[in-house]
Length: 577
Image (cartoon, rainbow, N blue to C red; front, side, top):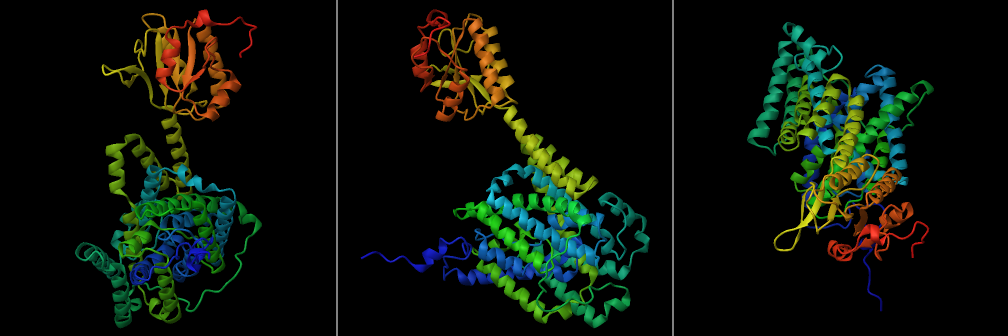
Protein backbone atom coordinates (compact mmCIF):
# COMPACT_ATOMS: atom_id res chain seq x y z
CA UNK A 1 0.00 0.00 0.00
CA UNK A 2 1.37 3.39 -1.03
CA UNK A 3 2.00 5.94 1.70
CA UNK A 4 -0.47 8.80 1.75
CA UNK A 5 0.74 12.22 0.61
CA UNK A 6 -1.07 15.07 2.32
CA UNK A 7 -3.16 17.50 0.32
CA UNK A 8 -1.25 20.25 2.07
CA UNK A 9 2.00 19.00 0.56
CA UNK A 10 0.45 18.97 -2.91
CA UNK A 11 -0.83 22.49 -2.43
CA UNK A 12 2.56 23.66 -1.18
CA UNK A 13 4.11 22.47 -4.43
CA UNK A 14 1.62 24.40 -6.56
CA UNK A 15 2.84 27.58 -8.29
CA UNK A 16 0.71 29.73 -5.97
CA UNK A 17 -0.16 29.94 -2.26
CA UNK A 18 3.54 29.37 -1.51
CA UNK A 19 3.54 32.31 0.87
CA UNK A 20 0.62 30.82 2.83
CA UNK A 21 1.13 27.06 2.83
CA UNK A 22 1.84 24.92 4.71
CA UNK A 23 -0.20 26.48 7.53
CA UNK A 24 1.21 26.18 11.04
CA UNK A 25 -1.70 26.49 13.52
CA UNK A 26 0.67 27.58 16.28
CA UNK A 27 1.89 30.48 14.09
CA UNK A 28 -1.58 31.77 13.10
CA UNK A 29 -2.17 34.01 16.18
CA UNK A 30 1.24 35.64 15.69
CA UNK A 31 0.47 36.27 12.00
CA UNK A 32 -2.91 37.83 12.83
CA UNK A 33 -1.35 40.15 15.43
CA UNK A 34 1.37 41.09 12.95
CA UNK A 35 -1.31 41.88 10.35
CA UNK A 36 -3.11 44.17 12.81
CA UNK A 37 0.21 45.87 13.57
CA UNK A 38 0.92 46.35 9.86
CA UNK A 39 -2.52 47.91 9.37
CA UNK A 40 -1.99 50.26 12.31
CA UNK A 41 1.36 51.48 11.05
CA UNK A 42 0.83 51.01 7.32
CA UNK A 43 -2.48 52.82 6.80
CA UNK A 44 -1.14 56.27 7.77
CA UNK A 45 2.04 55.56 5.85
CA UNK A 46 0.36 54.64 2.54
CA UNK A 47 -1.94 57.64 2.90
CA UNK A 48 1.22 59.71 3.23
CA UNK A 49 2.65 58.19 0.06
CA UNK A 50 -0.26 59.69 -1.89
CA UNK A 51 1.18 63.12 -1.12
CA UNK A 52 4.41 61.96 -2.76
CA UNK A 53 2.69 60.36 -5.75
CA UNK A 54 0.23 63.22 -6.21
CA UNK A 55 -2.87 61.01 -6.11
CA UNK A 56 -6.06 61.08 -3.94
CA UNK A 57 -5.64 59.89 -0.34
CA UNK A 58 -7.89 56.87 -0.84
CA UNK A 59 -5.57 55.45 -3.51
CA UNK A 60 -3.03 54.78 -0.76
CA UNK A 61 -5.54 52.49 0.96
CA UNK A 62 -6.18 50.74 -2.37
CA UNK A 63 -2.50 49.74 -2.54
CA UNK A 64 -2.86 47.55 0.56
CA UNK A 65 -6.08 45.88 -0.49
CA UNK A 66 -6.20 43.88 -3.76
CA UNK A 67 -2.46 44.26 -4.58
CA UNK A 68 -1.58 42.91 -1.12
CA UNK A 69 -3.97 39.99 -1.60
CA UNK A 70 -2.68 39.27 -5.13
CA UNK A 71 0.91 38.93 -3.99
CA UNK A 72 -0.08 36.88 -0.92
CA UNK A 73 -1.82 34.35 -3.18
CA UNK A 74 0.64 34.23 -6.10
CA UNK A 75 4.05 35.34 -4.81
CA UNK A 76 6.61 32.91 -3.38
CA UNK A 77 7.99 34.95 -0.47
CA UNK A 78 6.37 34.24 2.88
CA UNK A 79 7.51 37.57 4.37
CA UNK A 80 7.62 40.25 1.64
CA UNK A 81 4.97 42.99 2.00
CA UNK A 82 3.92 44.49 -1.35
CA UNK A 83 2.28 47.91 -1.15
CA UNK A 84 2.86 51.60 -1.91
CA UNK A 85 6.50 52.64 -1.72
CA UNK A 86 8.13 56.06 -1.43
CA UNK A 87 10.74 55.46 -4.16
CA UNK A 88 8.25 54.47 -6.89
CA UNK A 89 5.80 57.15 -5.72
CA UNK A 90 8.55 59.74 -6.16
CA UNK A 91 9.34 58.40 -9.64
CA UNK A 92 5.70 58.89 -10.66
CA UNK A 93 5.60 62.48 -9.44
CA UNK A 94 8.98 63.25 -10.98
CA UNK A 95 8.19 61.94 -14.47
CA UNK A 96 4.46 61.97 -15.27
CA UNK A 97 4.11 65.71 -14.65
CA UNK A 98 5.70 66.15 -18.09
CA UNK A 99 2.38 65.05 -19.68
CA UNK A 100 -0.27 65.78 -17.01
CA UNK A 101 -0.74 68.16 -14.09
CA UNK A 102 0.02 66.66 -10.69
CA UNK A 103 -3.19 65.46 -9.04
CA UNK A 104 -5.36 65.94 -12.12
CA UNK A 105 -7.79 63.26 -13.31
CA UNK A 106 -5.52 62.57 -16.30
CA UNK A 107 -2.49 62.26 -14.04
CA UNK A 108 -4.21 59.78 -11.70
CA UNK A 109 -5.28 57.68 -14.70
CA UNK A 110 -1.68 57.70 -15.94
CA UNK A 111 -0.40 56.34 -12.63
CA UNK A 112 -2.68 53.31 -13.13
CA UNK A 113 -1.48 52.96 -16.72
CA UNK A 114 2.10 52.89 -15.47
CA UNK A 115 1.16 50.17 -12.95
CA UNK A 116 -0.30 48.04 -15.74
CA UNK A 117 2.78 48.62 -17.92
CA UNK A 118 5.03 47.61 -15.02
CA UNK A 119 2.94 44.43 -14.62
CA UNK A 120 3.51 43.61 -18.31
CA UNK A 121 7.25 44.25 -17.97
CA UNK A 122 7.37 41.95 -14.94
CA UNK A 123 5.59 39.18 -16.87
CA UNK A 124 8.16 39.50 -19.67
CA UNK A 125 10.92 39.40 -17.06
CA UNK A 126 9.47 36.17 -15.66
CA UNK A 127 9.11 34.55 -19.10
CA UNK A 128 12.80 35.18 -19.81
CA UNK A 129 13.82 34.42 -16.19
CA UNK A 130 15.27 37.87 -15.63
CA UNK A 131 15.22 37.72 -11.84
CA UNK A 132 19.00 37.98 -11.95
CA UNK A 133 18.65 41.62 -13.07
CA UNK A 134 18.21 42.46 -9.39
CA UNK A 135 21.91 41.73 -8.96
CA UNK A 136 22.88 44.62 -11.23
CA UNK A 137 21.73 47.33 -8.85
CA UNK A 138 24.35 47.26 -6.12
CA UNK A 139 23.41 47.77 -2.47
CA UNK A 140 25.64 50.84 -2.30
CA UNK A 141 23.89 52.45 -5.29
CA UNK A 142 20.50 51.58 -3.78
CA UNK A 143 21.51 53.16 -0.45
CA UNK A 144 22.48 56.34 -2.29
CA UNK A 145 19.36 56.34 -4.44
CA UNK A 146 17.01 55.91 -1.48
CA UNK A 147 18.94 58.53 0.50
CA UNK A 148 18.46 60.98 -2.36
CA UNK A 149 14.75 60.11 -2.52
CA UNK A 150 14.55 60.70 1.25
CA UNK A 151 16.07 64.18 0.91
CA UNK A 152 13.69 64.97 -1.96
CA UNK A 153 10.62 63.70 -0.06
CA UNK A 154 11.48 65.51 3.19
CA UNK A 155 12.30 68.78 1.41
CA UNK A 156 9.01 68.61 -0.50
CA UNK A 157 7.00 68.50 2.74
CA UNK A 158 8.63 71.46 4.51
CA UNK A 159 6.11 73.89 3.03
CA UNK A 160 3.16 71.72 4.10
CA UNK A 161 4.47 71.53 7.66
CA UNK A 162 4.01 75.27 8.12
CA UNK A 163 0.90 75.75 5.98
CA UNK A 164 2.51 77.10 2.80
CA UNK A 165 1.96 76.05 -0.80
CA UNK A 166 4.80 74.01 -2.29
CA UNK A 167 6.93 76.07 -4.68
CA UNK A 168 10.15 75.49 -6.59
CA UNK A 169 11.49 72.55 -8.56
CA UNK A 170 13.78 70.15 -6.75
CA UNK A 171 14.73 69.90 -3.08
CA UNK A 172 17.18 72.82 -3.06
CA UNK A 173 14.70 75.30 -4.54
CA UNK A 174 11.89 73.98 -2.35
CA UNK A 175 13.92 74.53 0.81
CA UNK A 176 15.01 77.96 -0.43
CA UNK A 177 11.41 79.09 -1.14
CA UNK A 178 10.29 77.91 2.32
CA UNK A 179 13.07 79.93 3.97
CA UNK A 180 12.08 82.99 1.92
CA UNK A 181 8.42 82.73 3.01
CA UNK A 182 8.85 81.49 6.56
CA UNK A 183 7.30 84.69 7.95
CA UNK A 184 4.06 83.77 6.14
CA UNK A 185 3.72 80.48 8.01
CA UNK A 186 0.35 79.52 9.50
CA UNK A 187 1.00 79.23 13.22
CA UNK A 188 -1.84 76.79 13.90
CA UNK A 189 -0.64 74.48 11.13
CA UNK A 190 2.95 74.74 12.34
CA UNK A 191 1.94 73.94 15.93
CA UNK A 192 -0.07 70.90 14.80
CA UNK A 193 2.84 69.64 12.66
CA UNK A 194 5.23 69.97 15.59
CA UNK A 195 2.79 68.12 17.85
CA UNK A 196 2.54 65.25 15.37
CA UNK A 197 6.35 65.04 15.04
CA UNK A 198 6.68 65.00 18.84
CA UNK A 199 4.13 62.16 19.10
CA UNK A 200 5.84 60.07 16.39
CA UNK A 201 9.37 60.62 17.74
CA UNK A 202 8.25 60.27 21.35
CA UNK A 203 6.58 56.91 20.68
CA UNK A 204 9.65 55.72 18.79
CA UNK A 205 11.90 56.64 21.70
CA UNK A 206 9.72 55.70 24.68
CA UNK A 207 7.61 52.84 23.27
CA UNK A 208 9.07 51.66 19.93
CA UNK A 209 6.22 49.20 19.35
CA UNK A 210 3.53 51.87 19.78
CA UNK A 211 2.00 53.05 16.46
CA UNK A 212 2.99 56.70 16.80
CA UNK A 213 1.72 57.67 13.33
CA UNK A 214 -1.64 55.99 13.97
CA UNK A 215 -1.98 57.69 17.36
CA UNK A 216 -1.27 61.04 15.70
CA UNK A 217 -3.82 60.35 12.95
CA UNK A 218 -6.61 59.29 15.33
CA UNK A 219 -5.88 62.12 17.76
CA UNK A 220 -5.79 64.77 15.03
CA UNK A 221 -9.03 63.50 13.45
CA UNK A 222 -10.77 63.69 16.83
CA UNK A 223 -9.38 67.19 17.45
CA UNK A 224 -10.40 68.26 13.94
CA UNK A 225 -13.97 67.11 14.57
CA UNK A 226 -14.17 68.87 17.95
CA UNK A 227 -12.40 72.14 17.12
CA UNK A 228 -13.31 72.43 13.41
CA UNK A 229 -9.73 72.83 12.17
CA UNK A 230 -10.80 73.87 8.69
CA UNK A 231 -12.40 77.01 10.16
CA UNK A 232 -9.06 77.94 11.75
CA UNK A 233 -7.07 77.84 8.53
CA UNK A 234 -5.82 74.27 8.88
CA UNK A 235 -6.39 72.35 5.65
CA UNK A 236 -8.09 68.94 5.92
CA UNK A 237 -8.09 65.96 3.55
CA UNK A 238 -11.68 66.42 2.42
CA UNK A 239 -14.05 63.77 1.15
CA UNK A 240 -12.58 60.25 0.92
CA UNK A 241 -14.65 57.88 -1.25
CA UNK A 242 -15.94 54.88 0.68
CA UNK A 243 -16.60 51.33 -0.43
CA UNK A 244 -14.64 49.01 -2.68
CA UNK A 245 -12.51 50.49 -5.47
CA UNK A 246 -14.10 50.46 -8.92
CA UNK A 247 -12.59 48.15 -11.52
CA UNK A 248 -11.60 49.75 -14.82
CA UNK A 249 -9.06 49.51 -17.63
CA UNK A 250 -6.46 52.31 -17.47
CA UNK A 251 -6.44 54.49 -20.61
CA UNK A 252 -3.40 55.16 -22.79
CA UNK A 253 -3.06 57.84 -25.47
CA UNK A 254 -0.46 57.86 -28.24
CA UNK A 255 1.18 61.09 -27.06
CA UNK A 256 1.75 59.57 -23.61
CA UNK A 257 3.35 56.27 -24.61
CA UNK A 258 6.99 57.39 -24.37
CA UNK A 259 6.59 58.96 -20.93
CA UNK A 260 4.64 55.98 -19.61
CA UNK A 261 7.32 53.55 -20.84
CA UNK A 262 10.14 55.63 -19.32
CA UNK A 263 8.33 55.91 -15.99
CA UNK A 264 7.40 52.23 -15.96
CA UNK A 265 10.97 51.18 -16.79
CA UNK A 266 12.32 53.27 -13.90
CA UNK A 267 9.77 51.75 -11.50
CA UNK A 268 10.50 48.27 -12.88
CA UNK A 269 14.20 48.55 -12.05
CA UNK A 270 13.51 49.70 -8.48
CA UNK A 271 10.86 47.01 -7.96
CA UNK A 272 13.08 44.20 -9.27
CA UNK A 273 16.07 45.29 -7.17
CA UNK A 274 14.36 46.31 -3.93
CA UNK A 275 11.81 43.50 -3.82
CA UNK A 276 14.34 40.77 -4.60
CA UNK A 277 16.85 42.12 -2.08
CA UNK A 278 14.19 42.26 0.66
CA UNK A 279 12.71 38.83 -0.11
CA UNK A 280 16.17 37.24 -0.19
CA UNK A 281 17.19 38.81 3.10
CA UNK A 282 14.18 37.41 4.98
CA UNK A 283 14.34 34.01 3.25
CA UNK A 284 17.96 33.73 4.38
CA UNK A 285 17.03 34.86 7.90
CA UNK A 286 14.64 31.92 8.28
CA UNK A 287 16.59 29.43 6.16
CA UNK A 288 13.90 29.29 3.48
CA UNK A 289 14.38 28.83 -0.23
CA UNK A 290 13.66 32.03 -2.16
CA UNK A 291 12.41 32.19 -5.73
CA UNK A 292 13.00 35.54 -7.45
CA UNK A 293 11.19 34.52 -10.64
CA UNK A 294 8.07 33.34 -8.77
CA UNK A 295 8.05 36.58 -6.78
CA UNK A 296 8.19 38.49 -10.08
CA UNK A 297 4.86 36.92 -11.08
CA UNK A 298 3.43 37.89 -7.69
CA UNK A 299 4.64 41.46 -8.19
CA UNK A 300 3.13 41.49 -11.68
CA UNK A 301 -0.23 40.34 -10.29
CA UNK A 302 -0.06 42.96 -7.53
CA UNK A 303 0.64 45.77 -10.01
CA UNK A 304 -2.11 44.55 -12.34
CA UNK A 305 -4.50 44.60 -9.36
CA UNK A 306 -3.33 48.15 -8.58
CA UNK A 307 -3.91 49.23 -12.18
CA UNK A 308 -7.42 47.78 -12.39
CA UNK A 309 -8.45 49.36 -9.06
CA UNK A 310 -7.31 52.87 -9.98
CA UNK A 311 -4.21 53.14 -7.83
CA UNK A 312 -0.49 53.43 -8.50
CA UNK A 313 2.57 51.18 -8.67
CA UNK A 314 3.27 48.86 -5.72
CA UNK A 315 6.61 47.46 -4.65
CA UNK A 316 8.20 45.16 -2.11
CA UNK A 317 8.57 47.35 0.98
CA UNK A 318 11.58 46.78 3.29
CA UNK A 319 10.06 48.92 6.07
CA UNK A 320 6.65 47.20 6.07
CA UNK A 321 8.27 43.77 5.81
CA UNK A 322 10.35 44.59 8.89
CA UNK A 323 7.19 45.78 10.72
CA UNK A 324 5.53 42.40 10.14
CA UNK A 325 8.66 40.44 11.01
CA UNK A 326 9.23 42.44 14.19
CA UNK A 327 5.62 41.78 15.23
CA UNK A 328 6.10 38.01 14.83
CA UNK A 329 4.54 37.50 11.39
CA UNK A 330 6.09 34.72 9.32
CA UNK A 331 3.62 34.10 6.49
CA UNK A 332 1.32 35.98 4.12
CA UNK A 333 -1.56 35.33 6.55
CA UNK A 334 -0.42 38.54 8.26
CA UNK A 335 -0.84 40.47 5.03
CA UNK A 336 -4.31 39.05 4.38
CA UNK A 337 -5.25 40.17 7.90
CA UNK A 338 -4.11 43.69 7.01
CA UNK A 339 -6.21 43.60 3.83
CA UNK A 340 -9.31 42.67 5.85
CA UNK A 341 -8.76 45.64 8.19
CA UNK A 342 -8.27 47.98 5.22
CA UNK A 343 -11.52 46.67 3.73
CA UNK A 344 -13.34 47.52 6.97
CA UNK A 345 -11.83 51.01 6.93
CA UNK A 346 -12.97 51.56 3.33
CA UNK A 347 -16.48 50.34 4.12
CA UNK A 348 -17.09 52.10 7.42
CA UNK A 349 -14.41 54.64 8.35
CA UNK A 350 -13.77 56.90 5.35
CA UNK A 351 -15.92 59.73 6.76
CA UNK A 352 -13.56 60.30 9.72
CA UNK A 353 -10.63 60.24 7.28
CA UNK A 354 -12.11 63.29 5.52
CA UNK A 355 -11.40 65.28 8.71
CA UNK A 356 -7.70 64.33 8.73
CA UNK A 357 -5.62 67.54 8.79
CA UNK A 358 -3.26 67.90 5.81
CA UNK A 359 -0.25 68.88 7.98
CA UNK A 360 -0.54 65.51 9.75
CA UNK A 361 0.11 63.72 6.46
CA UNK A 362 2.90 66.21 5.71
CA UNK A 363 4.52 65.36 9.06
CA UNK A 364 4.18 61.61 8.45
CA UNK A 365 5.67 61.91 4.95
CA UNK A 366 8.45 64.16 6.27
CA UNK A 367 9.38 61.44 8.77
CA UNK A 368 9.28 58.83 5.99
CA UNK A 369 11.73 60.96 4.03
CA UNK A 370 14.01 61.40 7.03
CA UNK A 371 13.94 57.63 7.63
CA UNK A 372 14.99 57.00 4.02
CA UNK A 373 18.15 59.09 4.49
CA UNK A 374 20.40 56.18 5.39
CA UNK A 375 23.03 57.92 7.48
CA UNK A 376 24.13 54.63 9.03
CA UNK A 377 24.53 52.97 5.63
CA UNK A 378 26.42 55.94 4.14
CA UNK A 379 28.69 56.12 7.19
CA UNK A 380 29.39 52.40 6.99
CA UNK A 381 30.22 52.68 3.29
CA UNK A 382 32.56 55.61 3.97
CA UNK A 383 34.33 53.65 6.68
CA UNK A 384 34.53 50.28 4.94
CA UNK A 385 34.44 50.85 1.16
CA UNK A 386 35.30 54.38 0.00
CA UNK A 387 34.81 53.70 -3.71
CA UNK A 388 31.27 52.38 -3.09
CA UNK A 389 30.58 55.39 -0.85
CA UNK A 390 31.36 57.59 -3.86
CA UNK A 391 28.90 55.52 -5.94
CA UNK A 392 26.20 56.02 -3.28
CA UNK A 393 26.95 59.73 -2.98
CA UNK A 394 26.77 60.24 -6.75
CA UNK A 395 23.45 58.37 -6.96
CA UNK A 396 22.03 60.49 -4.12
CA UNK A 397 23.36 63.66 -5.74
CA UNK A 398 21.69 62.91 -9.08
CA UNK A 399 18.33 62.34 -7.36
CA UNK A 400 18.61 65.59 -5.38
CA UNK A 401 20.07 67.81 -8.11
CA UNK A 402 18.35 66.37 -11.19
CA UNK A 403 15.38 64.05 -10.59
CA UNK A 404 14.41 60.57 -9.46
CA UNK A 405 14.27 59.04 -12.95
CA UNK A 406 17.84 60.07 -13.75
CA UNK A 407 18.77 59.01 -10.23
CA UNK A 408 17.71 55.41 -10.83
CA UNK A 409 19.48 55.40 -14.20
CA UNK A 410 22.59 56.74 -12.50
CA UNK A 411 22.31 54.05 -9.81
CA UNK A 412 22.18 51.29 -12.44
CA UNK A 413 25.03 52.74 -14.52
CA UNK A 414 27.19 53.34 -11.44
CA UNK A 415 26.50 49.76 -10.27
CA UNK A 416 27.65 48.41 -13.63
CA UNK A 417 30.73 50.64 -13.59
CA UNK A 418 31.56 49.46 -10.07
CA UNK A 419 31.15 45.84 -11.21
CA UNK A 420 33.42 46.44 -14.20
CA UNK A 421 36.04 48.11 -11.98
CA UNK A 422 36.04 45.17 -9.58
CA UNK A 423 36.38 42.75 -12.51
CA UNK A 424 39.21 44.80 -13.95
CA UNK A 425 41.01 45.42 -10.65
CA UNK A 426 41.16 41.74 -9.84
CA UNK A 427 43.66 39.88 -7.70
CA UNK A 428 46.63 38.18 -9.35
CA UNK A 429 49.31 36.18 -7.60
CA UNK A 430 52.40 34.05 -8.15
CA UNK A 431 52.87 30.80 -6.26
CA UNK A 432 55.95 29.64 -4.40
CA UNK A 433 56.74 27.08 -1.71
CA UNK A 434 57.10 28.08 1.93
CA UNK A 435 59.73 26.41 4.18
CA UNK A 436 57.18 23.72 5.08
CA UNK A 437 56.83 22.82 1.40
CA UNK A 438 53.30 24.17 0.99
CA UNK A 439 52.21 26.40 -1.89
CA UNK A 440 51.62 30.02 -0.86
CA UNK A 441 50.52 32.98 -2.97
CA UNK A 442 52.61 36.15 -3.23
CA UNK A 443 52.05 39.50 -4.94
CA UNK A 444 53.13 39.43 -8.58
CA UNK A 445 56.86 40.21 -8.73
CA UNK A 446 59.87 38.98 -10.73
CA UNK A 447 61.96 36.05 -9.47
CA UNK A 448 59.24 34.60 -7.22
CA UNK A 449 59.59 31.08 -8.64
CA UNK A 450 57.82 27.79 -8.10
CA UNK A 451 60.91 25.89 -9.26
CA UNK A 452 64.14 26.84 -11.08
CA UNK A 453 63.14 28.52 -14.36
CA UNK A 454 59.40 28.07 -13.70
CA UNK A 455 56.88 30.69 -12.53
CA UNK A 456 53.28 29.88 -11.59
CA UNK A 457 50.95 32.80 -12.26
CA UNK A 458 47.42 32.73 -10.80
CA UNK A 459 44.69 34.84 -12.43
CA UNK A 460 41.57 34.98 -10.22
CA UNK A 461 38.82 36.03 -12.64
CA UNK A 462 37.31 35.25 -16.01
CA UNK A 463 39.34 36.51 -18.96
CA UNK A 464 37.49 39.13 -20.98
CA UNK A 465 38.25 42.16 -23.10
CA UNK A 466 38.70 44.59 -20.18
CA UNK A 467 41.28 42.62 -18.19
CA UNK A 468 43.10 40.55 -20.80
CA UNK A 469 45.66 43.34 -21.28
CA UNK A 470 46.68 43.10 -17.65
CA UNK A 471 46.94 39.31 -17.92
CA UNK A 472 49.30 39.56 -20.87
CA UNK A 473 51.33 42.49 -19.50
CA UNK A 474 51.96 40.86 -16.13
CA UNK A 475 53.16 37.59 -17.66
CA UNK A 476 55.49 39.40 -20.05
CA UNK A 477 56.77 41.53 -17.18
CA UNK A 478 57.62 38.39 -15.20
CA UNK A 479 59.55 37.06 -18.21
CA UNK A 480 61.28 40.36 -19.04
CA UNK A 481 62.37 41.22 -15.50
CA UNK A 482 63.51 37.77 -14.41
CA UNK A 483 67.16 37.85 -13.27
CA UNK A 484 67.74 34.50 -15.02
CA UNK A 485 65.83 33.28 -18.11
CA UNK A 486 62.54 31.53 -17.47
CA UNK A 487 61.76 28.27 -19.20
CA UNK A 488 58.08 27.87 -18.34
CA UNK A 489 55.12 30.03 -17.35
CA UNK A 490 52.36 27.96 -15.76
CA UNK A 491 48.98 29.70 -15.59
CA UNK A 492 46.93 28.60 -12.59
CA UNK A 493 43.52 28.94 -14.21
CA UNK A 494 41.51 27.51 -11.33
CA UNK A 495 39.43 30.69 -11.08
CA UNK A 496 38.97 31.19 -14.83
CA UNK A 497 35.55 30.00 -15.98
CA UNK A 498 35.17 31.84 -19.27
CA UNK A 499 37.33 33.34 -22.01
CA UNK A 500 35.82 35.76 -24.53
CA UNK A 501 36.97 36.34 -28.11
CA UNK A 502 39.26 39.28 -27.28
CA UNK A 503 40.95 37.28 -24.52
CA UNK A 504 41.36 34.28 -26.83
CA UNK A 505 43.10 36.39 -29.47
CA UNK A 506 45.32 37.90 -26.79
CA UNK A 507 46.27 34.42 -25.62
CA UNK A 508 47.29 33.54 -29.18
CA UNK A 509 49.50 36.63 -29.35
CA UNK A 510 50.97 35.93 -25.91
CA UNK A 511 51.73 32.33 -26.87
CA UNK A 512 53.48 33.47 -30.05
CA UNK A 513 55.52 36.04 -28.14
CA UNK A 514 56.61 33.50 -25.52
CA UNK A 515 57.47 31.03 -28.31
CA UNK A 516 59.70 33.67 -29.86
CA UNK A 517 61.52 34.06 -26.54
CA UNK A 518 61.89 30.33 -26.00
CA UNK A 519 59.50 30.26 -23.03
CA UNK A 520 56.83 27.57 -22.76
CA UNK A 521 53.33 28.15 -21.43
CA UNK A 522 51.10 25.61 -19.70
CA UNK A 523 48.02 25.66 -17.50
CA UNK A 524 46.51 23.81 -14.55
CA UNK A 525 43.05 22.91 -13.26
CA UNK A 526 40.97 24.46 -16.00
CA UNK A 527 37.25 23.58 -16.01
CA UNK A 528 36.05 21.54 -18.96
CA UNK A 529 34.19 24.44 -20.57
CA UNK A 530 37.25 26.68 -20.61
CA UNK A 531 39.47 23.81 -21.71
CA UNK A 532 37.38 23.48 -24.85
CA UNK A 533 37.68 27.22 -25.47
CA UNK A 534 41.47 27.15 -25.08
CA UNK A 535 41.76 24.18 -27.44
CA UNK A 536 39.57 26.03 -29.92
CA UNK A 537 41.86 29.03 -29.81
CA UNK A 538 44.96 26.78 -29.63
CA UNK A 539 46.28 29.33 -27.18
CA UNK A 540 48.21 27.08 -24.82
CA UNK A 541 50.70 24.67 -26.35
CA UNK A 542 53.48 22.80 -24.55
CA UNK A 543 54.96 21.14 -27.60
CA UNK A 544 56.25 17.61 -27.01
CA UNK A 545 54.76 17.39 -23.52
CA UNK A 546 52.10 14.76 -23.06
CA UNK A 547 49.84 16.93 -20.89
CA UNK A 548 49.10 20.49 -21.93
CA UNK A 549 46.65 20.89 -19.06
CA UNK A 550 47.67 19.66 -15.64
CA UNK A 551 45.51 18.79 -12.66
CA UNK A 552 47.65 20.44 -9.98
CA UNK A 553 50.69 22.67 -9.57
CA UNK A 554 52.73 19.72 -8.28
CA UNK A 555 51.97 17.58 -11.33
CA UNK A 556 52.83 20.48 -13.64
CA UNK A 557 56.17 21.14 -11.90
CA UNK A 558 57.09 17.43 -11.96
CA UNK A 559 56.31 17.19 -15.68
CA UNK A 560 58.06 20.38 -16.77
CA UNK A 561 61.07 20.93 -14.51
CA UNK A 562 63.40 18.77 -16.61
CA UNK A 563 62.01 19.73 -20.04
CA UNK A 564 63.19 22.56 -22.23
CA UNK A 565 60.44 24.12 -24.39
CA UNK A 566 62.81 24.75 -27.28
CA UNK A 567 64.27 21.23 -27.16
CA UNK A 568 60.83 19.63 -27.02
CA UNK A 569 59.31 21.68 -29.84
CA UNK A 570 58.18 19.55 -32.83
CA UNK A 571 58.82 20.58 -36.42
CA UNK A 572 56.42 23.28 -37.66
CA UNK A 573 54.49 20.81 -39.83
CA UNK A 574 54.21 18.14 -37.14
CA UNK A 575 50.72 17.21 -36.07
CA UNK A 576 49.71 17.03 -32.45
CA UNK A 577 48.85 13.54 -31.31
